Length: 429
Ligand code: AMP
Image 1 (cartoon, rainbow, N blue to C red):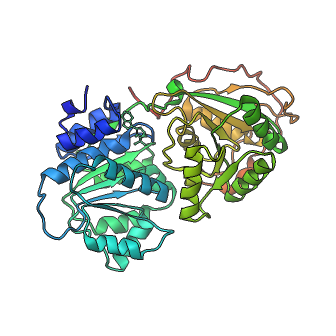
Image 2: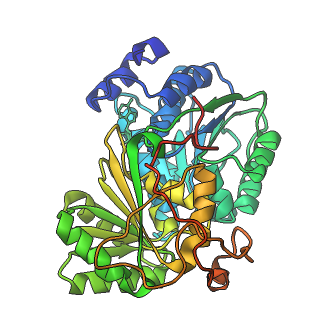
Image 3: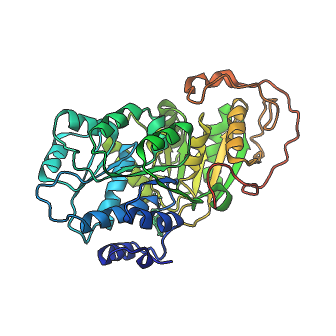
């Protein structure tokens, strides 16, 4: 299978060749022809599958071949993303793949001045990439007209809903013409996502692909049981011992990210934190420095990390497990990309075992446990031990302390090699 077989124009084939892609990824093989035929699409695909090119390439082709000589340019395609970083990345992809076309694009997101965005919109755009909040600001100020949208893309829908954007999305939808092509991408299929899809999509083509970075294939996962208060020390030890040069570390809170970054810096490791409280400029700078290798450790919260495209990242560390098991999948999706094997390490203390259990249930896989000599947990609870029922709802981030366990081990845990069992929900063949 080649990009040429998918029916892409020479301009797009040239742009793809410039990127060095030789073969379309599974999602591209399925999504590109369906989108070119004008169908709605409902695709389950994580970051790392090549989904961005999967929708951007056919979108560019459709816009460049239909109705190309319109007058004043109100946007014809709208791509909504949950975060600023993802919006910026998608916008970069639009530019990269549209390099040999004359279509214009713009990106609007919060945290930066609105004036340059208004000016860009005034100059006229064909493709607009946006986060929901800032898009609504523009609609409110009447600096944007969405009445000519032909194609709507909802990227990382599950995260948009997790972040509470559903009302914003509905407000935006009300401004769009009903006759349009709609493409929905989501890493997970929750009931809320299905409901949204039912209201938005007309006879969609369903696409589910095995991610190139599925845990089973590309990411070695290991859990290191350790006491809570020794996690930082163990992390520094591992980075130094294995001489890891580029590590993405996840914490649950902004405060935790800052504190850990400071402590690691004191250990002599060049570290930066990115989270929602940092300005857009600071987040972009931190990411660039990390990508260039100027910063060795990037500490991030889930929201800040969403959609980050960091190629060939060899190590992801869960300094704390996420409350929402799907976030674990998103986190480890940062490694093992583009066919490279990555390693996802989780430092897990006793009160996190219920979270670990939920993650293992979602993965349908028991993660290998490996106690590092010298960092043996002193707590009596062990992974695999019976846990009290969790009190918390899926989103109940603040109640973590309630799920602490005092139980004694029942089962002797036998480590299972990661990726040896079938996984649920994350892929189909
Ligand atoms: P995405 O899932 O869209 O975030 O893409 C993940 C990464 O895969 C990006 O760095 C893309 O540049 C890269 N990529 C996309 N399509 C291909 C392809 N056909 N071959 C190789 N790499 C690709």
